[in-house]
Length: 346
Image (cartoon, rainbow, N blue to C red; front, top):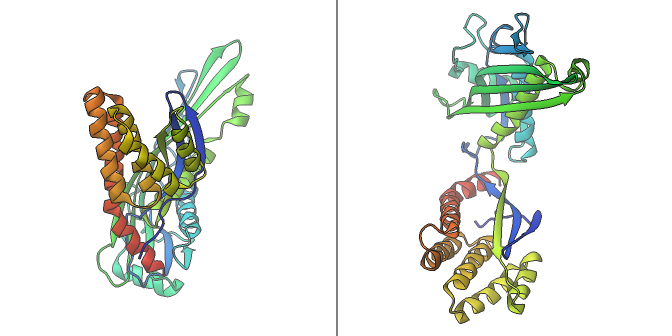
């Protein structure tokens, strides 16, 4: 089953040196592949909130404030809510449900990683009509808030939040988790203002900042569980030559077959190694945009070798094309997994 994995062009930029940059969207598989029969999933919070005094430091004009407190319980549910909504927006499962109560044993320490047991998973699925459970089993936040003076009454405020957590996917038919996902991310908020009072108006308080971070993290980790789109940058080389310009016009109009025909003819007729290298790179892009990833990789590697012959191993184009070839290799390897996941949808 063949699937188009490249969306339309989202951005075009012109740079010096005869290079046109463009933004594309690529479809990538989720890290976790669920069985075909999983059509409804339940999002569960199984993490314990850390104490209010834990993980939060507030420095005001260089002085640590011993009254600093932050509540993490709402942020935990924000992680689950935003993750569930992002999974639902992917239109992969028939439905994504959110379990609004914590299922964790309250006697367990917040730093302890607590897995759901198979009886718990079975009970949750039966009670909510779900086929699988995605559980936030552990989440720790570390937040630093610092306000410094800039002179003349102006102040500068920064909030840095680091997050470490564990999410797992569970099936009621399995004793062990289907998959374990370790997450690590950070968020930084920066604001300057004319006074401390104005800064407090614009800079979120500790609880709101933590909730914003939780919402952000949930949206990020959703991609582990469903096929998703990501934005990437590509480029092609241009020239003042009329046939190069014609090919560039086809490319900008998303007519890659016609662009490839012109670039291929120019490649065959050109004797300059550098020009042939640029054309080979262009042909790699054209093949990629037509979803022929193996051929795109061949052209990318050929372009790399030609750039090496023209400018040596240290030429920046050699490194650029090597990275591009590696990206294409990774996409080829993930192609089968993506096709399997999309076939499950239908």
